[in-house]
Each structure stands twice: as structure tokens, then as C-alpha cells.
Length: 162
Image (tube, rainbow, N blue to C red; front, side, top):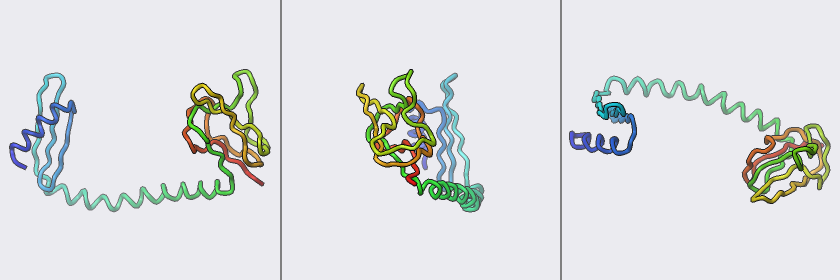
């Protein structure tokens, strides 16, 4: 990288409004800091040859340790939930567990439901759509909080069909 490239980089950083940019290449390390108080630009230019092998040597050791627990936890949860049927949102909107603020909940955890039972309401564009169950079973878990937005195909309920 020559002096003209560094000057162009400084101009680009100044125009972008970023307060700090770090650039590391094979043989150099550049840090450009712009201060809003004095509008000055500080540049640090340092060779990186001695630091690079240490960073590369440490990365492979730490990656498998962090990935192993993370991958085993979702697998355990997937096995627990595999016996349940997931009822998903058919539309985008706002999820409501009650027909009105002063009315009781449609369903609660532990309640047995049948096909055609209303589970919740999803409001989309000022229209209140009753979501009916397509399965019979027992509500195991409600996955969405009342009055929260939901996406299409987002899991809403877990039902134990047995």
C-alpha cells in the first residue's frame, strides 16, 4: 500500500463519518481515528509480521470449544420438541391470546383442545383473524407473548397430540 492509497483511505473515512477504521493486511496494520472534538485524524502505521502467526495459531483451538456446546444444546431441545406438533402463524400480524382485554384467554398451557377450537387472534391491517386448531391434543407451550408481532410461519403453540 503506497502513500496515495493511504491518503485516499483517510479521505474516504472522513467523508463516511466513521470514528475509527482498522485495516489489517499481510504486512501492515493501519488504524484511522477521527475525533469529533477537534476534527483531526490520527493514523497509526505498524508492521504486523510478528503478531499475525500468534493470532492464527490461537483461532483453531478456540473455535471447536465454543461450537461443541452450542451445537449439542439445540439438538437436545429438538429431540424434546420432536414429539409435539407445532402450530404456526398463517399470517403476519399482532398475536392476541384473548378476544378482548376484559375476556378470558382462548387457551392456556395444559388445556386440551380439539380441531376447530379458536387458539388466538392475529390482527392484520385492522382485521382480527381467529386462528383455529387443525389438530387435537394438549397445549404444552405457548411460544409467543400476548400483543406481540408475529411473522408468517412463526411457531405459536406446541401441542402434544397423544
